[in-house]
Image (cartoon, rainbow, N blue to C red):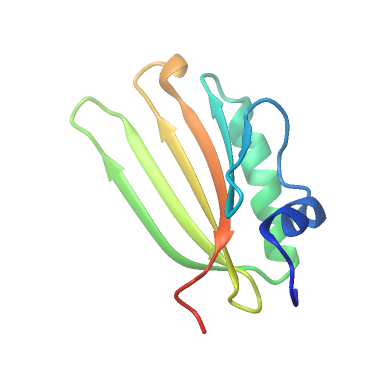
Amino acid sequence: MENKTVQSLAKSLKFPSGNSTVDLGSAISWLKKGGYAGEKTLDNFIKKIKENGWFESKNDFATTVNGNTSNVHFYKSPDHKFMIKSQVYFGCEKSYNRFSLDLFSNTTEK
């Protein structure tokens, strides 16, 4: 992954695209609101990056009193230069569900 930009890496990983994807230059974000379709997209993408040597470096899970749940995972690239944050939020109604991915440079690793 030598000298790759976030954009070229996103393209090679087939990062989800479309109207729900925002390119911020130093990061790319994807978001799906409502329903359950985003979960399959997210799961398929995570499976693919793991097959390409990415590994989970951190995760966090939370539940609120009213039953909402949030699950956040961070994955590092094999060379430790990039990270992906995946987040799943299930609300008490399916219209509140959110699925997101963020790809960015890992500036903490040298």
